[in-house]
Image (cartoon, rainbow, N blue to C red; front, top):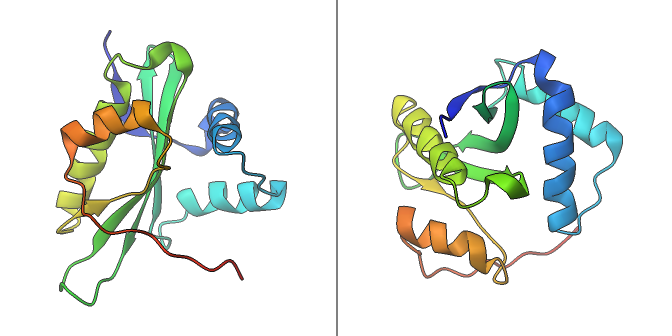
Length: 147
């Protein structure tokens, strides 16, 4: 399988949206359509720190990754938060997720980021096999309060 990783363009929306919906379904999340629209617009606004990459085999979009650069009190340069990663079921286990993560690592290095970090649900055992191979577990637990 030859995988091409590239930034998605506004013309890729119709290919991106089913994968985005698949990701939301996996996490049992409901996002209002206007938030999805805003998110897509942010990916294509140079003033925003949000980015989207797609993994293609030929013309078929097999996976997506969203990442965000943010400041840290611990470093002069930014950190990179890999927020969402999703591959179509038929592409799983074929290197698509790894290629997307590696592309985020490369983008983060270009921006001078000192780390890439992300979260996954404790039940996402399949993804954790990959994550344990490409990154270190920090040992930190997430706490949050929904407002």
